[in-house]
Image 1 (cartoon, each protein chain N blue to C red):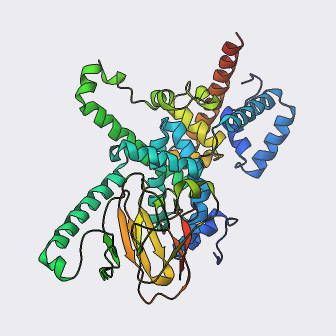
Image 2: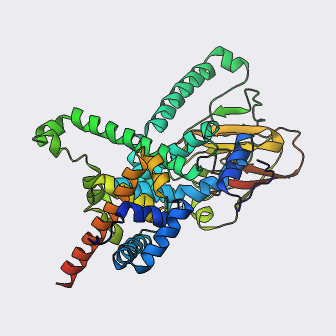
Image 3: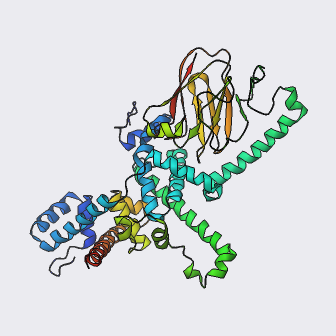
Length: 195
Length: 251
């Protein structure tokens, strides 16, 4: 790919190609393009904006270090979201282990199912409740992820399949179910509000 | 959202909306949707959800908001941070301990290194350091005043934070990059007030130092530095674009 100049107008593939040949300044537009979006997406996933910012930072550092491993036909955006998704999963596991090892947890909780470690609970407990987060609360973590990636972040079903690590058909099914569930939930909330 | 007379699945409509189906299939669906009220209704519902999500979502975090968030993280302690930062903290502690041992030893005295950064308070010439042009001196004191004039006339302080240089309150709300004046032979004291690792680089002077969160790195400007304006920035990907860039004017 013939690329020479770095600009905020350059597309992702051009910028990635420049970074690969040592033009590290080409990573700046990629960071600016995706960092804020990624933090917001992770905030909706976790309900914890601090954790979201931390994971986003980690994801970009890993992306920069491993950019040579990014397949040429793969979009940078979907790739960095996939990295962040893995880091989030690791963070959730660590949090779960820490809480399970805590004596307070053993005393306070009757069973592991009540551990409060589900993303859905995290989101409702911590996030400032805007209109979107209220609608998201009714969705399972799997459907919430699909809705955020498709409706908010604008990824296509094939990109989401790669980010999440599922088949294309599964991604399409999750997206359609998520939208149906979200619409139903939103209508219920509106109805309750009217009453 | 389904219609018994229509055999187009919701999954197919997702694919149709995303426009990645083969052209001939898209054309068939175009013709079908034109006459199928059920498909029109489902596609409309999908679009309404997209629009609803986008219009009600929280705004994208701004850099200044992120800086406030990082401040909050710092006050709550490193335990809230991820493993990356934990690893860095351990490495920093080990490095600092090793450095203190060297500085306290006769060898440290022999090569002219000393603890403390207030060079010039009694008029002495600041020690020249050849160990990669950097020594870790001290942790930044909380609430330290940011100023182009450092703790002594021979030290200039440039605070780094997430993501900018200089005075946080001014730089975070301003699009103007920081400008700092200094003279050859002066020490640049570089506290990192952010929660992430930063870097201070001046390419023209071959200065390139990493600064761990909560640490201060001091860099000596060579005595033979040519007067002029030098760009300084954070080399960590994305940080320069986010605002971590400024100009050092050597007079």
